[in-house]
Length: 313
Image (tube, helix red, strand yellow):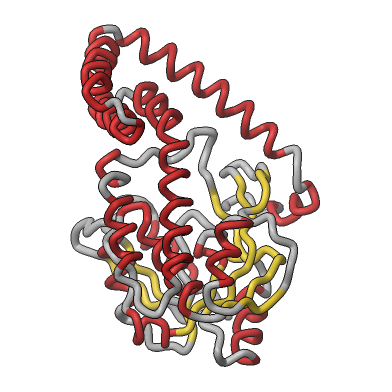
């Protein structure tokens, strides 16, 4: 196991040291950056050091489920032409509330190149936490590209578009959504990352152009549909500049850029002058978000036992 601490100020080093001292623990290569180099550079640096036949990427707040690595590696060794083992992922909150599955697919199958990418579009793309890859993939096509929130998306679709993949319905990992507030990224990390993502897809070689076009259309539609909620989140959190940029971008894609620019400035200025509006918006959004999480958690009770973790987790 290799751990790359991105200059965190928490107890990461202490926790890793305790794990290394535990009898029977796996070998851990722990290194800490002298300064925060950003998520992309941290992943890129770590991927460049991989020398094992297979690898997987695990974020600090997610969890691999028992037997996932053993099942994945065994399946990959039986199918030498496959570059990825893609297990489903259980979405949950930090309090243990199960929200559902990342993919709606119920099949266990080997899907050919291109078909695997279409599978992501139709059934949902499990986070890469639940996937195992061959190192050969990095040797042929490099690691991840600096595409903001689309860096992992491009990596997964690139593999699925170019090589056969093994899909498993059985969950391999837990993806932690945190508390009732969805993680909010700065808008400049989302845009122009989308256009950079689309340009990167255009640069793919030996991929069906129709498949590439469908991937681009899917994510642009997803991006536009999510902008209104994103705007509300920015306003609720006091990120008025991000809200203004998001409003302008939403209107530009709907064909009314000039009016939206004026509206964005008025909205941002109004919320900036009247903090009470921000608090009301924040409270309203939290109620909506909590209700939505509760509704989602009513489903997939058969996976609830996966959340019976030790108290310290």
